[in-house]
Image (cartoon, rainbow, N blue to C red):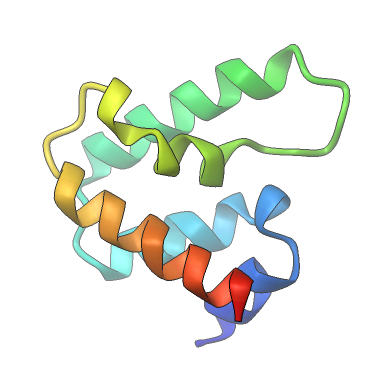
Length: 84
C-alpha cells in the first residue's frame, strides 16, 4: 500500500516503488531488468529527474518482455491511482 502512495505522489520518479510493485505482482526478474534497462536508456539523455520507469511500463508492448498483460495491468492500476 505504501508503494502505491509513493507512486501516486510522484510517479515520474518512483522507479524503486514500481519495481517493488512488479516483484509483488509476480513479474519476473528478467522482465523487470528489461524494463529498467529501457527506462535507464531514456533517462540517460534527459536533464530532468524523471526515471522513465512508469512511462516504460505504459509502453511495454514495444519491449521484449513475456508478461505484457500483467505489466499493462500494473500500469493501468498505477494510472487509476494517479487520476483518483
